[in-house]
Length: 198
Image (cartoon, rainbow, N blue to C red; front, side):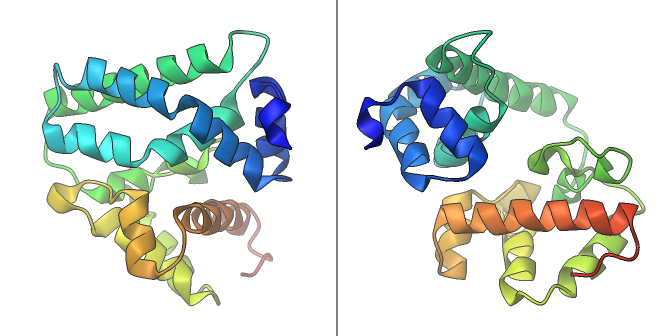
């Protein structure tokens, strides 16, 4: 059904979380563009491991692009290509800074901001231990496993690729991402309203 829809229509379905086939179609249409851009900009300045990790997160990054996409500014393919380039440049900048850090840095400032996207919600802070306590109390046992694998399962303090997290948990990558993002939203509410329980 989605094969005849435009990219803009598909992104709207993804944003409404009404049709998983829409995301699959976007991934099928644009994986080549994403990989080409990562290879073009990543291979010049990143290690093969880093390039591989960015490519491994292709499906998630296409999903994020669909969520953030504004059809009034550019075609989706152009936006995704720019996003892939930006991911590579961001990693390059992190490497240049090259100060010791930990995956905790991903667990950051969502406490101060209500508008962060899920993967922006983290950087090392005194609140980290509180966040992990809340996660450990979640009734869904998969939540703690997903967070531990994502943030502490990677080598050299890097994020574990979603497909690797999914393999260890025993569910699909998209299911892991959905559980992760839903938990972040719950955490935001928990932090901003102590009466809300998991």
